[in-house]
Length: 396
Image (cartoon, rainbow, N blue to C red; front, side):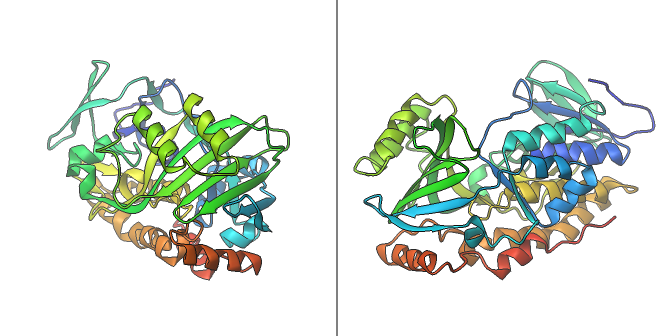
């Protein structure tokens, strides 16, 4: 790719070609920075579960010129069906009943479609280093000396960590993840499997107290579905189950006596080459920068999938961070980024307290209460969530 470095431009490094990293690269380039993006994968990642872009994040997408492309890629989920322990139907509802969607302010797209759209906006205007990552960071008064795992050494004016919830950049700045991880009491596994169920643009979810299994078909004639297994656990399990095989064993043991389609899902999980296992947690940091290094997206403020706002916070945060740096030094810019963005982030992280875990009740009583709400077509996510999604008005 073309490297646009010049003597008049501050040279910056973005670690991670994530949603946050690609959006930040675009906006930093627009603000006159010479941008390099380093990504340990061989290319922009195009897999993953469908994600939501809502509220203020749609304004960011519009300003990037990618909103029409995202509208064309909208999954347009038509039905959500909830099942009891025996596989009997509890309720079948429109997605908006659950998400509190307001017309036109909530798009759901495949993660790969969003990543491709973001990459297209900046691939010719930034330098990309795929298949590499940061090995060491050494801040001085005039820049950040970076050694890459591939052996290269370079100095940048600023470095940005957009490397996800388990950010190595954050660990270098502030210490181990457990200091900032707010565990929310669940673990989950996602993977793809054959669509032998006849599902089309719909999600089917089975629940017992503390356990959920879901199948999600994003298209009309997809030969694959996204499989999702979620379960409550008092403590995060990584110390006990650190390897993929051990994580598979853990999930299989939790769902060993489950009915419905779960036995087939467990068998498919054993063979899946795209299994992703993680805890449901948030990152809560007292500050998002140190010296010449700043964090954005999940690395700084992962809200968890219970809020549905991870992607939206990444897009908005990238816009705000780049804009805060325009025309001023990094000290003032990073301070402005936190001042102008933190309230929006906190409102959206707090959606877990407003009802984000309602889909995954941990007791029989809570499960029956949720089912009664579904039978009555009462929205599970109310005005507070919709307000939080659009709580920030973008500066020009």
